[in-house]
Length: 288
Image 1 (cartoon, rainbow, N blue to C red):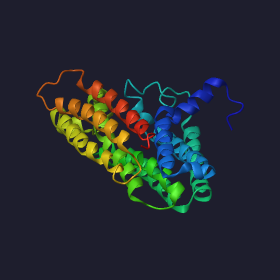
Image 2: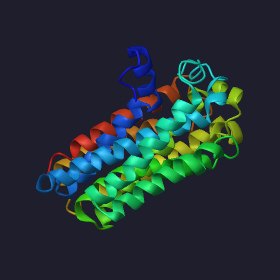
Image 3: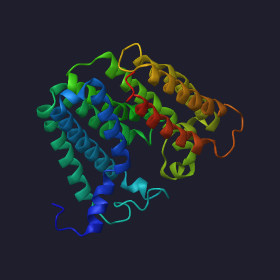
């Protein structure tokens, strides 16, 4: 379909899939599969990564299609392919539906029905529930965290074909991590979201309440990350590194409880959340 298009059009079609977010999803999916023993079932893991990639690419393409008018109102997104007029909406819709339609059979036949069902849940919750909910309720924060937290669990179930405690803890880690991460984005881009009518936590409840929620979710996140140690999928080295990373992330989040933490707090919270997640999954490579 895209072979005869000029390079700029190909880049725009790729942009619809939000490749930076997709790469994070692949990273966490691979992490879940590796912890479950992916070295023994590498073909299954490859199918899991391919199916998850297509599911994410499809969901993001459909999200861009549905939010094209809102994207045109925000400085951050108005140059995306659809609001800028570089890709026709019908093409974005076709791409999203095609990728989603390919993803589920690949997951079902290449891994197992459980992983395919989780992939379907991620697609439906992101496209059908979360995307339209963003302009209606601040509860969209928690709804949007559900599909974002499923990939590591899908990596785990692809290998084991079971819902087990370690996979569910990985899900909980990603779920809780997304909440302060997304709140920081909402604070950074508050003016943009106002223009589009997005109902984020800072818009609805105020900046100080939003910072309080970020601190609370981080406080819950840190002990959850340590549950992987008694579950025997992580060792002492991970426990030490996770504790250090958690203390730094939590310490900065708690600074947001001050009445005026300064204009740079949200940006540093956002950057620290990325460093934290990368470091946490990197620490999981240490089995001892």
